[in-house]
Image 1: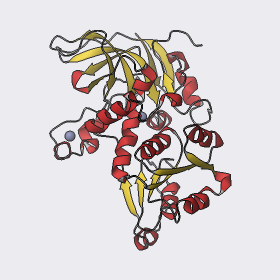
Image 2: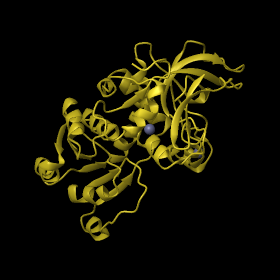
Image 3: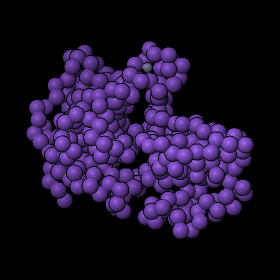
Image 4: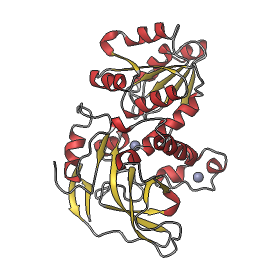
Amino acid sequence: MRAAILSQGRFTVETVPDPTPGPSTVVLAVSACGLCGTDHSIYSTRLLPDGAILGHEFAGTVVEVGQSVREWAVGDRVAVVPIPYCGHCELCRTGKQNLCATGLGAMMGCGGAPGGLAELVCVPTASLRRLPAALEPPRGALVEPLAVAWHAVKVAGIQPGTRVGVIGLGPLGLFCGMIARQKGALVFGTDARAHRVGWAHDLGLGAFASDDRPDEYIRDLTHGGPDVVFEASGKPESIERAAHLARTGGRVVLVASYHTPAEMTPGHWFNRGIALLPSIAYTREDFDEALEAITNRRVDVASLARRTHPLEEVQKVFDSFSTQTETAKLVIDPSRKTPQ
Ligand SMILES: [Zn+2]
Ligand SMILES: [Zn+2]
């Protein structure tokens, strides 16, 4: 099979042996694999040893089943839960699967088993989720990142009428805004990059660019600041900004991951009673609910990934990861043979 192999900080498409299924696994032909900030930071920090196959947001079709597999058959279309939750640690047993260290440490495409930037991938049956026939592959690949936002919206405690601010309008910020709005929240986002503000407008979300004094506008429009601010920019300094944006007694939900220290004023958080709520990954339940929301279009994500790229363009896609203005969500289709 062809796979995008990451070695020496670069991707090359190589022909490698096809995976063979173990007794309780299946082999999928990958039809769409989304890329996100996690992939980009694995790539830019050279986190993984040479030879890694990235991709944890993917969907595909079963092409081979292991000898003990009864409930799946060739031709089944599936999305994949890439985190192999251990199922028996204290966190897994108390509804906090999203924090399972074993699961997160062995995530497919992130240091665990090979991921979806390949024509074929081996997946344990416990990680498969059935996709309806009408759901086209790019939307299937969006279930995983939507599940991340789904969990964050749960952590935030959104009710009808909740006033929400979103800092950072990449896919995760947009997803948080879309889900919060679907739950009846009033949503205003902001991003330094004008094209991302445009994406939010296209989805019908209120949004302001940086040169518009966005925080001032959002505080005015929410009569004193949002009840909830999603920090989805991944910039450490935005965490303190989020506390200034939130209303007194409000909550700041961290949806991105942060790799460098940031300055914070604890007294400002304390005196105004601002809660800091981190939200990492998702549980199986979140994944299933996100899949249902995509299937019935309660959250309509199709417009975020209008086109796909072939494997041969993976390096180019990573090179333009932060500067491209074409699409909110970058999706690779490994079944496409030639660049278009
Ligand atoms: Zn991701
Ligand atoms: Zn566990």
